Length: 610
Ligand code: GLU
Image (cartoon, rainbow, N blue to C red):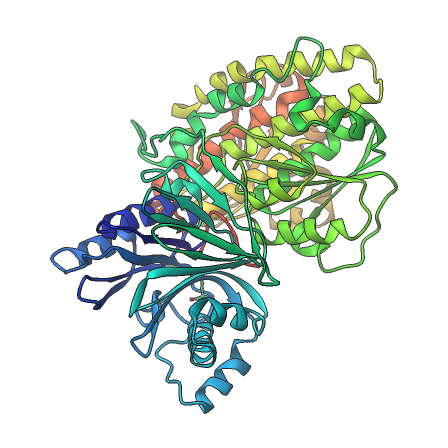
């Protein structure tokens, strides 16, 4: 969600900024812009509604030389998607800003600034912050001091970079609630929303903490905490190789990422499970001692990550005998919730920057949870840094907005947590063995599921003209039905709802007709007979069924039911295996509908605003 890149260097930075923006595209945005100060001290700014390629085209033939610049991809929150509202914004030709986040008290500040004579050229909250900095610059005479003064007047969230046109060799960077990382170079320094965007120019990074303000020049980076005290922040070298972010042989990132799942899972498991044990230090050095004390698990997440948490609840209670509750981050953070004794607070997020999840973690710290654990795909992200324990999924960069390999590797991490907790509580060794065996077999089971691609591609044609659909599951497959419905909504824009199959008769049966496809997730487990009754309830009312089941479940295709054979698998990992055909289904339906699969409308990858 929104991207920021800034550079102060001795060489032209235009291409670094544009490439940085391109690498941030996966976060989702609706417009883009760049502003560079040239050798003569002139500010050149180009903004475009649309994508980074369009911005790049617009930059062709324009003089955008210059060694200091900032660039931005905007995901509009305040003010429509227009060129006027796109960043960078400029105050009276003197100050330039890019901003990620929301300034909540923008309306009152705007009034005050208008009364002082500032003219607004956009509807954004960002321009309010910019003019306020300008006003404070007039009072303090120094941009660093001005930003330090302004942020005290702001309510809301920001990651921001600002500089003066007549002193472009200094960028001032501030972060509160929105991620920013500093990239350290030799004789040049950078700032961006994530390290991936700066990988072509450096592998040395420094993360800012909440409330930090930094001053970047070519030669140095100084960081100040919210009290104004100069502080040292850890530097680290990224070990992520300059990995290819291309689509390879695939038409979309999402399809590539679906097919990368066996490798992503192998990487996530590697050296972390032995034949009979889980290496519990993968959750952190103190994990073993802490996990022993856990009596309750509270999982908090959003979107797809929330669905992985819901699956984990079934697993934790069934296999580790530990009670578990799961809640959406934007809900738990705004209510008085009950904190169980010796409770482990687990957050799940692909990016580790999800604003609501991060806020829920910060709140949990003041509520008396015993300890916190982040399950996350991005090393050094805010969630990882601020949690006591962490489990890194090794999915690799996930670019498609609709999460696929991050979800299945989260499930792997959660299943390992179940085993580690069970292990520390002395549950039967054969249960641990069952889990480790199932995990070992998972990558090849996923490979078998991927072989369903061609069949599902054909099946997808039957969905293209549909407006609505229903996904059904029972037990731990209910959250998988929810995830299948979410995927279909996200990328094909078909309305999809998931129900616990036993709930059908309490309402949704009224919706059933021949125009409403019903997708059923039906592994051969102890709930199968119950599920079959639910399937019959649908058939009796003329519904068209698509049943994902293994051969042993003994469903027969006929004119009202299409059965898709999913590989037979151990019950424990069945939720992960059954996820794959549902991902493929949503992908191929979206292809037929011609939607923008990797960047579906209105959605962003990393949801860093509330
Ligand atoms: N609130 C700002 C705007 O609407 C920034 C949005 C963003 O994070 O891209 O322009």
